[in-house]
Length: 109
Length: 114
Image (cartoon, rainbow over all chains, first blue to last red; front, side, top):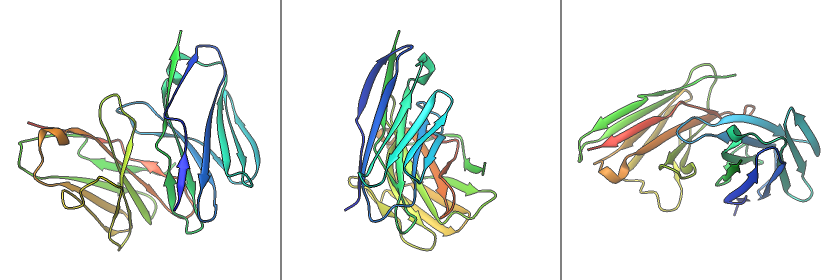
């Protein structure tokens, strides 16, 4: 079966750096997505990786290793507003999106 | 980015009645639509995946006879909560994607069953 694993919950301190991991086992691979969701709001698109390596966008970076079935989302200079859930999703060989259960990130002062 | 319109944004209904929520992709053809539910202080939970013209695939624990999903066209999917009860009160949200786009989310529907 297809599966995406990410930690259920993480806690970090304001101003610090946190890395949210995502591992996947899917039938084929056609890209990996990260989304941010604040409770009660629609998720917002953060990043897309289809080739190995690091994609940087301001304070957020996303890394992909296709051979390891692994990605991470790196958040730097954490702010209280970064408290949210972070969703990892993989597009498989049939172009179906497979969703992880999300990681709830709690930022403490 | 592409726009996904979800309607209504909030609804209050009486226990035992049915409620229909619509999800429309306004400027692209969505081959796949997803429906999620989120209870207070919990993560978004995927309920079902629907491909245009096919029956929806429901996640484990989601009652397909209670949550009816229709994806009759490439721009419209509907979720009907049948015989709603107070425990069905939640935030429901849809997303739409195609082979070449990421998933775009609707604004969500807050359902309250009284």
